[in-house]
Length: 354
Image 1 (cartoon, rainbow, N blue to C red):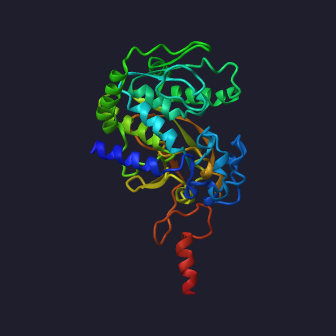
Image 2: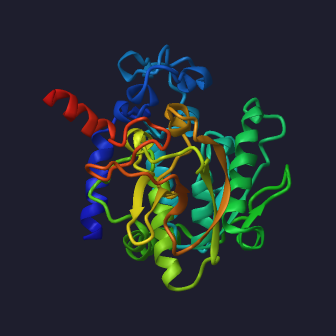
Image 3: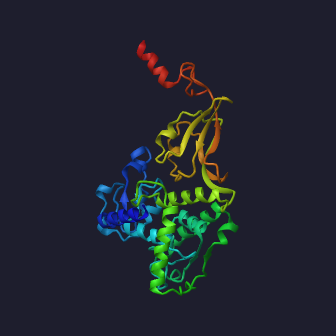
Protein backbone atom coordinates (compact mmCIF):
# COMPACT_ATOMS: atom_id res chain seq x y z
CA UNK A 1 0.00 0.00 0.00
CA UNK A 2 2.78 2.43 0.94
CA UNK A 3 4.74 1.66 -2.22
CA UNK A 4 1.63 2.38 -4.28
CA UNK A 5 1.23 5.75 -2.55
CA UNK A 6 4.83 6.74 -3.25
CA UNK A 7 4.58 5.65 -6.90
CA UNK A 8 1.44 7.75 -7.30
CA UNK A 9 3.22 10.73 -5.78
CA UNK A 10 6.16 10.25 -8.15
CA UNK A 11 3.87 10.05 -11.20
CA UNK A 12 2.05 13.18 -10.09
CA UNK A 13 5.40 14.90 -9.66
CA UNK A 14 6.34 14.18 -13.28
CA UNK A 15 3.04 15.58 -14.49
CA UNK A 16 2.83 18.58 -12.18
CA UNK A 17 4.01 22.06 -13.10
CA UNK A 18 6.80 23.29 -10.87
CA UNK A 19 4.95 26.30 -9.56
CA UNK A 20 2.20 26.94 -7.00
CA UNK A 21 -1.36 26.09 -7.98
CA UNK A 22 -4.35 28.38 -7.53
CA UNK A 23 -7.55 26.73 -6.25
CA UNK A 24 -10.31 29.10 -7.32
CA UNK A 25 -13.09 27.43 -5.34
CA UNK A 26 -11.28 28.17 -2.06
CA UNK A 27 -10.47 31.80 -2.87
CA UNK A 28 -12.32 34.34 -0.73
CA UNK A 29 -13.29 36.21 -3.89
CA UNK A 30 -15.20 33.16 -5.09
CA UNK A 31 -17.26 33.28 -1.88
CA UNK A 32 -18.03 37.00 -1.82
CA UNK A 33 -17.24 40.12 -3.85
CA UNK A 34 -18.06 42.93 -1.46
CA UNK A 35 -14.61 42.90 0.14
CA UNK A 36 -12.06 41.79 -2.53
CA UNK A 37 -8.96 39.99 -1.26
CA UNK A 38 -5.71 40.85 -3.06
CA UNK A 39 -3.15 39.43 -0.63
CA UNK A 40 -1.52 37.17 -3.22
CA UNK A 41 -1.10 40.18 -5.52
CA UNK A 42 0.20 42.41 -2.74
CA UNK A 43 2.80 40.05 -1.25
CA UNK A 44 4.31 38.49 -4.39
CA UNK A 45 7.85 39.93 -4.83
CA UNK A 46 7.97 38.80 -8.47
CA UNK A 47 4.60 40.24 -9.52
CA UNK A 48 3.30 36.89 -10.71
CA UNK A 49 -0.27 37.96 -9.96
CA UNK A 50 -1.89 41.07 -11.39
CA UNK A 51 -5.20 39.96 -9.87
CA UNK A 52 -6.23 36.99 -7.69
CA UNK A 53 -6.82 34.71 -10.66
CA UNK A 54 -4.74 31.75 -11.80
CA UNK A 55 -5.78 32.28 -15.42
CA UNK A 56 -3.84 35.54 -15.66
CA UNK A 57 -0.90 34.57 -13.42
CA UNK A 58 2.52 34.74 -15.09
CA UNK A 59 4.18 31.68 -13.55
CA UNK A 60 7.32 32.22 -15.66
CA UNK A 61 8.16 35.01 -13.21
CA UNK A 62 7.74 32.77 -10.14
CA UNK A 63 10.87 32.50 -7.98
CA UNK A 64 9.49 29.71 -5.80
CA UNK A 65 9.39 31.71 -2.58
CA UNK A 66 5.99 30.31 -1.48
CA UNK A 67 4.99 33.63 0.08
CA UNK A 68 1.60 33.49 -1.65
CA UNK A 69 1.07 29.99 -0.24
CA UNK A 70 1.91 31.12 3.28
CA UNK A 71 -0.13 34.31 3.21
CA UNK A 72 -3.32 33.20 1.46
CA UNK A 73 -5.92 33.45 4.25
CA UNK A 74 -8.17 30.70 2.90
CA UNK A 75 -5.46 28.24 1.77
CA UNK A 76 -6.41 28.68 -1.88
CA UNK A 77 -2.85 28.36 -3.20
CA UNK A 78 -0.98 25.05 -3.10
CA UNK A 79 2.84 24.88 -3.08
CA UNK A 80 4.75 23.62 -6.10
CA UNK A 81 5.35 19.90 -6.32
CA UNK A 82 9.06 20.51 -5.71
CA UNK A 83 8.28 22.10 -2.35
CA UNK A 84 5.76 19.38 -1.58
CA UNK A 85 8.46 16.73 -2.15
CA UNK A 86 10.84 18.63 0.13
CA UNK A 87 8.34 18.40 2.97
CA UNK A 88 7.81 14.70 2.27
CA UNK A 89 11.55 14.17 2.45
CA UNK A 90 11.65 15.95 5.80
CA UNK A 91 8.84 13.98 7.42
CA UNK A 92 10.09 10.62 6.12
CA UNK A 93 13.60 11.07 7.49
CA UNK A 94 14.27 8.31 10.00
CA UNK A 95 16.55 10.39 12.22
CA UNK A 96 14.86 11.61 15.37
CA UNK A 97 16.52 15.03 15.02
CA UNK A 98 15.85 16.79 11.72
CA UNK A 99 18.11 19.54 10.39
CA UNK A 100 16.62 22.69 8.86
CA UNK A 101 18.38 25.55 7.08
CA UNK A 102 17.40 27.87 4.23
CA UNK A 103 18.52 27.24 0.66
CA UNK A 104 21.28 29.85 0.99
CA UNK A 105 23.03 27.79 3.68
CA UNK A 106 25.97 25.50 2.88
CA UNK A 107 25.07 23.12 5.71
CA UNK A 108 23.69 19.66 5.04
CA UNK A 109 20.02 19.67 5.99
CA UNK A 110 16.83 17.68 5.67
CA UNK A 111 14.80 20.68 4.57
CA UNK A 112 15.97 23.84 2.80
CA UNK A 113 13.12 26.27 1.99
CA UNK A 114 13.61 29.48 0.01
CA UNK A 115 13.58 31.30 3.36
CA UNK A 116 12.86 30.20 6.92
CA UNK A 117 10.09 32.78 6.86
CA UNK A 118 8.13 30.57 4.46
CA UNK A 119 7.70 27.70 6.97
CA UNK A 120 4.11 27.43 8.27
CA UNK A 121 3.54 27.01 12.00
CA UNK A 122 1.92 23.61 11.44
CA UNK A 123 5.23 22.17 10.21
CA UNK A 124 7.07 23.32 13.35
CA UNK A 125 4.34 21.75 15.50
CA UNK A 126 4.46 18.54 13.46
CA UNK A 127 8.22 18.28 13.89
CA UNK A 128 7.89 18.77 17.65
CA UNK A 129 5.29 16.01 17.85
CA UNK A 130 7.30 13.51 15.83
CA UNK A 131 10.78 14.08 17.29
CA UNK A 132 13.25 16.93 17.42
CA UNK A 133 14.58 19.58 15.05
CA UNK A 134 17.51 21.98 14.90
CA UNK A 135 17.10 25.20 12.93
CA UNK A 136 20.07 27.13 11.51
CA UNK A 137 20.06 30.88 10.85
CA UNK A 138 23.70 31.25 9.79
CA UNK A 139 22.89 32.84 6.45
CA UNK A 140 20.18 35.16 7.77
CA UNK A 141 22.12 38.12 9.14
CA UNK A 142 23.10 39.81 5.87
CA UNK A 143 20.59 38.12 3.58
CA UNK A 144 18.39 40.21 1.31
CA UNK A 145 15.52 37.94 2.33
CA UNK A 146 15.94 38.82 6.02
CA UNK A 147 12.73 40.94 6.11
CA UNK A 148 10.74 37.71 5.74
CA UNK A 149 12.12 36.42 9.03
CA UNK A 150 9.24 38.20 10.75
CA UNK A 151 7.05 35.42 9.31
CA UNK A 152 9.45 32.85 10.76
CA UNK A 153 9.25 34.37 14.23
CA UNK A 154 5.45 34.48 14.02
CA UNK A 155 5.19 30.83 12.92
CA UNK A 156 7.59 29.70 15.62
CA UNK A 157 5.68 31.63 18.30
CA UNK A 158 2.35 30.24 17.10
CA UNK A 159 3.60 26.63 17.20
CA UNK A 160 5.07 27.20 20.65
CA UNK A 161 1.81 28.63 21.98
CA UNK A 162 -0.15 25.81 20.35
CA UNK A 163 1.77 22.98 22.06
CA UNK A 164 2.98 24.82 25.15
CA UNK A 165 6.38 26.43 25.64
CA UNK A 166 7.95 23.65 27.73
CA UNK A 167 6.86 20.90 25.35
CA UNK A 168 7.98 22.81 22.25
CA UNK A 169 11.34 24.08 23.56
CA UNK A 170 12.35 20.56 24.62
CA UNK A 171 12.07 19.45 20.99
CA UNK A 172 12.87 22.41 18.74
CA UNK A 173 16.30 24.04 18.97
CA UNK A 174 16.88 27.43 17.36
CA UNK A 175 20.58 28.07 16.82
CA UNK A 176 22.03 31.52 17.42
CA UNK A 177 22.51 33.74 14.39
CA UNK A 178 25.75 32.69 12.73
CA UNK A 179 25.91 29.17 14.21
CA UNK A 180 25.86 26.23 11.81
CA UNK A 181 24.09 22.89 11.91
CA UNK A 182 26.14 20.03 13.36
CA UNK A 183 27.50 17.60 10.79
CA UNK A 184 25.59 14.38 10.33
CA UNK A 185 27.97 11.45 10.75
CA UNK A 186 26.34 9.08 8.27
CA UNK A 187 27.67 7.39 5.16
CA UNK A 188 25.63 7.79 1.99
CA UNK A 189 24.54 4.16 2.23
CA UNK A 190 23.40 4.63 5.83
CA UNK A 191 21.58 7.82 4.95
CA UNK A 192 19.70 6.12 2.11
CA UNK A 193 18.90 3.17 4.34
CA UNK A 194 17.51 5.46 7.05
CA UNK A 195 15.44 7.34 4.49
CA UNK A 196 14.05 4.04 3.24
CA UNK A 197 13.22 2.95 6.79
CA UNK A 198 11.56 6.28 7.39
CA UNK A 199 9.41 5.83 4.31
CA UNK A 200 8.37 2.35 5.44
CA UNK A 201 7.64 3.10 9.08
CA UNK A 202 6.95 6.82 9.09
CA UNK A 203 4.87 7.79 6.09
CA UNK A 204 2.35 4.98 6.38
CA UNK A 205 1.64 5.84 9.99
CA UNK A 206 1.43 9.63 9.80
CA UNK A 207 0.14 10.40 6.32
CA UNK A 208 -3.50 11.47 6.53
CA UNK A 209 -6.06 8.90 5.47
CA UNK A 210 -7.04 10.45 2.17
CA UNK A 211 -7.26 9.54 -1.47
CA UNK A 212 -5.77 12.91 -2.41
CA UNK A 213 -2.04 12.50 -2.80
CA UNK A 214 -1.42 15.82 -4.49
CA UNK A 215 0.20 18.90 -3.00
CA UNK A 216 -2.92 20.44 -1.54
CA UNK A 217 -2.50 23.64 0.52
CA UNK A 218 -3.56 21.97 3.76
CA UNK A 219 -1.36 18.90 3.47
CA UNK A 220 0.83 19.94 6.42
CA UNK A 221 -2.26 20.80 8.49
CA UNK A 222 -3.74 17.38 7.73
CA UNK A 223 -0.44 15.76 8.67
CA UNK A 224 -0.45 17.60 12.01
CA UNK A 225 -4.05 16.63 12.75
CA UNK A 226 -3.31 13.01 11.90
CA UNK A 227 -0.40 13.06 14.37
CA UNK A 228 -2.54 14.66 17.06
CA UNK A 229 -5.23 12.02 16.75
CA UNK A 230 -2.75 9.16 16.87
CA UNK A 231 -0.59 10.56 19.66
CA UNK A 232 -3.56 11.53 21.84
CA UNK A 233 -4.45 7.86 22.10
CA UNK A 234 -0.95 7.18 23.39
CA UNK A 235 -0.93 10.20 25.76
CA UNK A 236 2.20 11.61 24.13
CA UNK A 237 0.97 15.15 23.65
CA UNK A 238 -0.19 17.99 25.95
CA UNK A 239 -3.64 17.60 27.49
CA UNK A 240 -4.71 20.98 26.10
CA UNK A 241 -3.91 22.81 22.85
CA UNK A 242 -4.19 26.52 22.10
CA UNK A 243 -6.16 27.23 18.94
CA UNK A 244 -7.27 30.48 17.34
CA UNK A 245 -11.06 30.69 17.34
CA UNK A 246 -13.63 33.33 16.32
CA UNK A 247 -15.09 35.49 19.08
CA UNK A 248 -18.85 34.98 18.91
CA UNK A 249 -21.21 37.36 20.71
CA UNK A 250 -23.92 35.00 21.95
CA UNK A 251 -26.23 37.92 22.72
CA UNK A 252 -26.30 38.85 19.04
CA UNK A 253 -25.83 35.60 17.12
CA UNK A 254 -29.05 33.69 16.50
CA UNK A 255 -27.63 30.86 14.37
CA UNK A 256 -28.76 32.09 10.96
CA UNK A 257 -26.21 29.73 9.40
CA UNK A 258 -24.73 32.11 6.83
CA UNK A 259 -21.21 31.72 8.20
CA UNK A 260 -21.60 27.93 8.09
CA UNK A 261 -22.59 28.00 4.43
CA UNK A 262 -19.76 30.27 3.24
CA UNK A 263 -16.83 28.89 5.26
CA UNK A 264 -14.26 27.58 2.71
CA UNK A 265 -13.27 24.68 4.96
CA UNK A 266 -16.52 23.85 6.80
CA UNK A 267 -15.11 24.95 10.15
CA UNK A 268 -18.44 26.27 11.49
CA UNK A 269 -21.64 24.38 12.23
CA UNK A 270 -24.96 25.32 13.83
CA UNK A 271 -26.02 22.71 16.37
CA UNK A 272 -29.19 22.38 18.45
CA UNK A 273 -29.04 20.63 21.81
CA UNK A 274 -32.65 19.50 21.83
CA UNK A 275 -32.56 18.21 25.40
CA UNK A 276 -31.60 21.61 26.79
CA UNK A 277 -33.19 23.65 23.99
CA UNK A 278 -29.95 25.51 23.31
CA UNK A 279 -28.32 26.32 19.99
CA UNK A 280 -24.56 26.52 19.54
CA UNK A 281 -22.28 27.78 16.83
CA UNK A 282 -19.63 25.07 16.84
CA UNK A 283 -16.13 25.93 15.65
CA UNK A 284 -13.76 23.19 14.47
CA UNK A 285 -10.29 24.77 14.81
CA UNK A 286 -8.61 21.86 13.02
CA UNK A 287 -10.32 22.96 9.81
CA UNK A 288 -10.10 26.73 10.27
CA UNK A 289 -7.51 28.93 8.50
CA UNK A 290 -8.67 32.15 10.18
CA UNK A 291 -9.50 33.69 6.81
CA UNK A 292 -11.99 36.02 8.52
CA UNK A 293 -14.76 35.44 5.99
CA UNK A 294 -17.24 34.54 8.74
CA UNK A 295 -16.58 37.86 10.44
CA UNK A 296 -16.81 39.78 7.17
CA UNK A 297 -20.01 38.14 5.99
CA UNK A 298 -22.01 38.06 9.27
CA UNK A 299 -25.09 40.28 8.71
CA UNK A 300 -25.44 41.01 12.43
CA UNK A 301 -21.74 41.58 13.23
CA UNK A 302 -21.93 38.81 15.81
CA UNK A 303 -18.34 37.67 15.14
CA UNK A 304 -16.06 40.39 16.44
CA UNK A 305 -12.60 38.94 15.85
CA UNK A 306 -10.35 35.99 16.69
CA UNK A 307 -8.45 35.00 19.81
CA UNK A 308 -6.53 32.08 21.30
CA UNK A 309 -8.60 29.61 23.30
CA UNK A 310 -7.60 26.45 25.11
CA UNK A 311 -9.23 23.20 24.04
CA UNK A 312 -8.74 19.70 25.49
CA UNK A 313 -6.77 17.60 23.01
CA UNK A 314 -9.52 15.03 22.49
CA UNK A 315 -12.24 17.64 21.89
CA UNK A 316 -12.78 18.82 18.31
CA UNK A 317 -15.15 21.79 18.73
CA UNK A 318 -15.42 25.06 20.58
CA UNK A 319 -19.11 25.40 21.62
CA UNK A 320 -20.42 28.97 21.37
CA UNK A 321 -23.91 29.27 22.95
CA UNK A 322 -26.16 31.61 20.94
CA UNK A 323 -29.73 32.90 21.09
CA UNK A 324 -32.30 30.15 20.62
CA UNK A 325 -35.63 31.04 19.06
CA UNK A 326 -37.59 28.59 16.91
CA UNK A 327 -39.76 28.97 13.84
CA UNK A 328 -43.28 28.01 14.87
CA UNK A 329 -43.69 25.97 11.70
CA UNK A 330 -40.40 24.10 11.13
CA UNK A 331 -38.37 24.88 14.30
CA UNK A 332 -35.53 26.49 12.33
CA UNK A 333 -33.72 29.51 13.87
CA UNK A 334 -35.59 32.82 13.93
CA UNK A 335 -34.16 36.21 14.80
CA UNK A 336 -35.45 37.01 18.33
CA UNK A 337 -36.61 40.56 17.61
CA UNK A 338 -38.24 39.59 14.31
CA UNK A 339 -41.86 40.63 13.86
CA UNK A 340 -42.64 37.19 12.48
CA UNK A 341 -42.53 33.87 14.27
CA UNK A 342 -41.63 32.14 11.00
CA UNK A 343 -38.17 31.64 9.55
CA UNK A 344 -37.34 33.25 6.19
CA UNK A 345 -37.93 30.02 4.26
CA UNK A 346 -41.37 29.34 5.77
CA UNK A 347 -42.29 33.00 5.38
CA UNK A 348 -41.39 32.87 1.68
CA UNK A 349 -43.43 29.69 1.21
CA UNK A 350 -46.40 31.32 2.93
CA UNK A 351 -46.21 34.37 0.67
CA UNK A 352 -46.16 32.13 -2.42
CA UNK A 353 -49.38 30.47 -1.28
CA UNK A 354 -51.02 33.86 -0.98
